[in-house]
Image 1 (cartoon, helix red, strand yellow):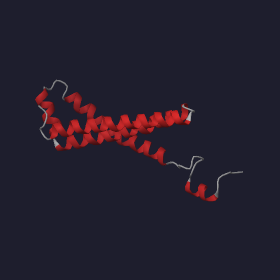
Image 2 (spheres, helix red, strand yellow):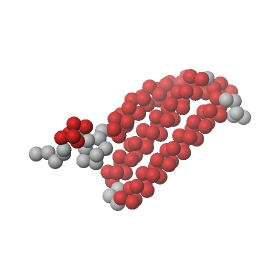
Image 3 (tube, rainbow, N blue to C red):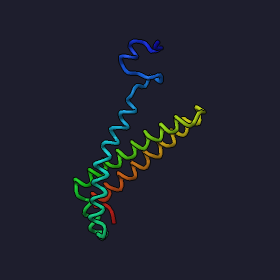
Image 4 (tube, rainbow, N blue to C red):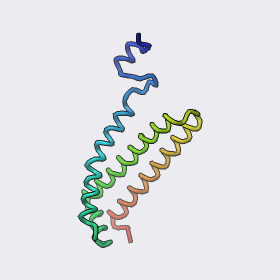
Length: 128
């Protein structure tokens, strides 16, 4: 016997009425992170002994800048989604859970903004 309405079963909604959207977003960001992290690791391995000017020139490249910004967005969004799941599972007090999730989201947004700002600053030659 199912307690879900036929409409909820048709939409795939769970007991929290959120469906699988959160789960899918976490999987999609994980899939996006695989090539982006591989790109970063390989590039940094190849540029391992590069000097400051070489690194600035590398980051200033339009393709590299776009990939680094995409990495920052995907990384911090994925982090936000994952930590939210952990907090929802392990913090039973509603107000504390809400505060923790808001703090984590704020920190991830702040870190993403700082990362994107750093890449743009280097890209447009503002770095000293």
